[in-house]
Image (cartoon, rainbow, N blue to C red; front, side):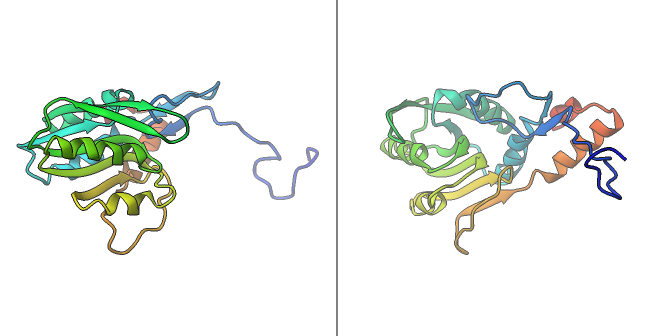
Length: 212
């Protein structure tokens, strides 16, 4: 028996490193070091969000990205919904201080879906909401892939009277919220399970991206 092996240990005392990781997406601008190949599902969280928003009348809707860093994801989301896209002009200063000077694109009188890759304290989104109000939007819903929601961010966003809904996927643990919270959490567990099955069976994972 190898040194350090416990009786009945099926691993024989070995610690195996993963040769592949699976993740829904990475935050925009996120950095990674030398790690195993990643089987990413970067579009599936967006597909779950899109499926949710298709229940609404989108004839007057537009997707708004808070900044350039998330513009590509916002554009992909807008294509899934068949609607236009706009973007905030953001500057970040020291700490959590951000300024959005304007909104690029047609949002006046529109039903806005604000899409960010992750929401931590909600500072950027709340700053964007001020600019959207100045442009006279018709309604506001907020969505993100990764709902970190630190320091009461859900409550701060929910306290904005014109925010009708906050939607995220369950890529990270969601903090406890009030019973009357505007937060809606969508599960990507079925997509991850199907991706793992395909990897195990040697089937195509990329086919998941092509599915409607």
